[in-house]
Length: 168
Figure 1: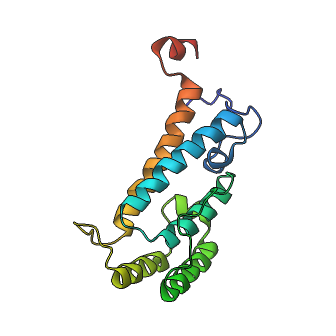
Figure 2: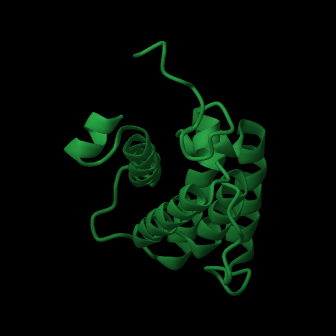
Figure 3: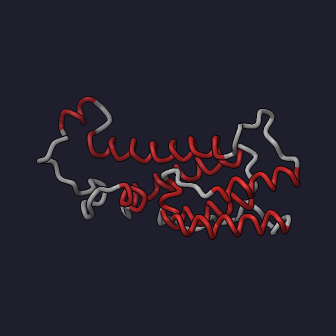
């Protein structure tokens, strides 16, 4: 840690660099990188046999936290099963109480697991090697997303090549 180093974001040169700001910096390249990362990682969530209703709920709310535009087309085109839809609505309400920024940090309402379990019981859509809990696959995806954002931030701040790093 260098106390003489500025705490201002090197992307926008406007705000204090915090975890919250990392998720919301409005600088064009930073926002574009955040969108690419979220698209990549949200697709990974879907690969784990996640209900498309759940993914739409997560995607819509996380994009709001990240200050990203809504997805052009929802993952799910219909309401699907009523019981799953109701469980997803409960999970959304529960996550609102915790906070969607906290969701990205891994503070996930247990209601998501209930909704996903219900979806799998109704549809039979299980992965070939089911994890002990659906969140066991979700959390590493969220951590990888945050890691990708921090990696980009570090590249901007410290450079990528040895020459760029020496110039910092």
